[in-house]
Image 1: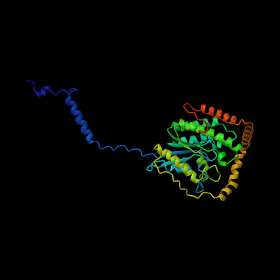
Image 2: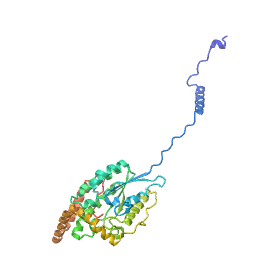
Image 3: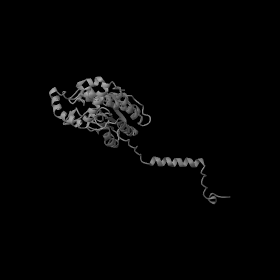
Length: 331
C-alpha cells in the first residue's frame, strides 16, 4: 500500500485549472488592497484666452488717449472677450502708419509666436495713401496673413473701412481716386472674410462716416466714442458666435470730446506735420490721379477709370488662394 509519504508532493495544477485562476486573482486582489491610494492626476488649469491685434494707427488706438498713451477699440474689446474666471491675455502688435507689408513681415510672425485664439487684422488705409498702391500685392499679403493665423485655428476679426477722401472732405478730383482704391481694398477684405469665415464688421457705411462725434480732430481716426462703438459692435458679433464671455464694452466716454479750439490747435500743429509727411509720398501721385480724373470727366470717359480699377481688382482676387470667393467693388 502506498502511503502519502511515498507519493511525495502533489504535482502543480495545470495552468488551465479554474482553482489556480481563482487563487491568482485572490492574491492580486490582496496586493491591490495593500497598495497605498494613488492620487488622481491634477487637471491642467484653465487657459486664459489670447487676443492679438494687428494693424495700423486705428488699432494702435490713435484718437483715444489715456495716461499719456493710446488705448483704442482693440484694448476695450479685449477686456470683454474672455471668460471672467480665466481672463484674457491681450497683445497689441499694431503700429501707427503700418502698411499691409508691415503687418505681414513684422507683426504676423510675432503674433503667431504669441499663439492667439483670437486675432484682429485691420489694415489698408495707409496703402491707399501711398504712391505705389498695388491692389494685387495688398490682396496676396492679406491672404497670407489671414491664412497663417487661420491655419493654427485662430478666429479672425476683419472690417471694411471708409475711404480717407470722404473722411477728409477732399474735393472730388482728389477724393474719387482714394475712394476707388478703398473700395478695392474693402472688396478684397470682404472676399477674405468669406474665405476664412471671419467675424466681419462693416464700417464703410455712410451713417458711420457722417456722425462726426465718432471721429477725432484729424478726421481720420475715431475719437474715444468711436473706438468704444467699434469695440461694442465687434463684441456683439462675437457674442452671436458664443465667443464673447465677458461684459460688453461701455459706450459711455471717459473724456469730453475735443473742443473746436482743440481741433484747430491739432490741425495747426500735429495735423500739419501729418499732412506734410503724407504729401511727400502721396501728393505727386494724387495730383496725377486728380489730373486724370478731370481729363476723363471733361471727355466724358470717366467710366474708363472705374473699369481699369475693376480689372485690377479682378486680377487681384483671381490671384488669391483657392476657394476665395470673389467680390465686386462697393460690396
